Image (cartoon, rainbow, N blue to C red; front, side):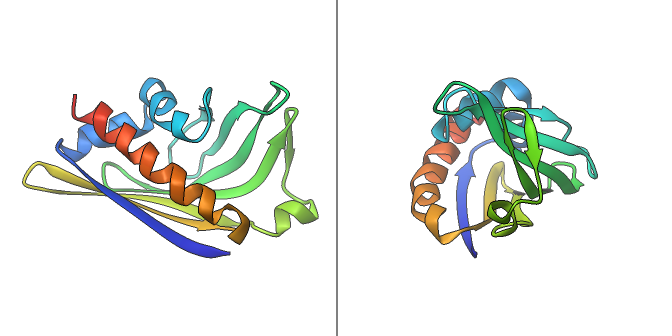
Length: 149
């Protein structure tokens, strides 16, 4: 497991960037960089469970089972990934899951002179590092485009 970091400057107030990143309709747009049809169920409130879902190769829903470890409005969100979801079943105990859990995905929002820097810090398995190094910059560019409208 290793940590990787991404950031982007967005010409919009951090409140707008935050809302664009986390509200359902725009979340579905910028996360197409990872998988078309991505969405979440649950809440971004601290302590809440949240499911990050999308269709798998067979058209069935799968994804990540997570918890919101920390949420400081318009400043910071920490997502603790604790399991997989496959065919509607949450798996937090298999050997496959134990290889990478818990892992964290953190979003930090810092505004200076109407420019918001979004920083993303995530824990990844070596096998997914290259994939995320391609996908995250695309996702952040989509977020920037949406937030700057």
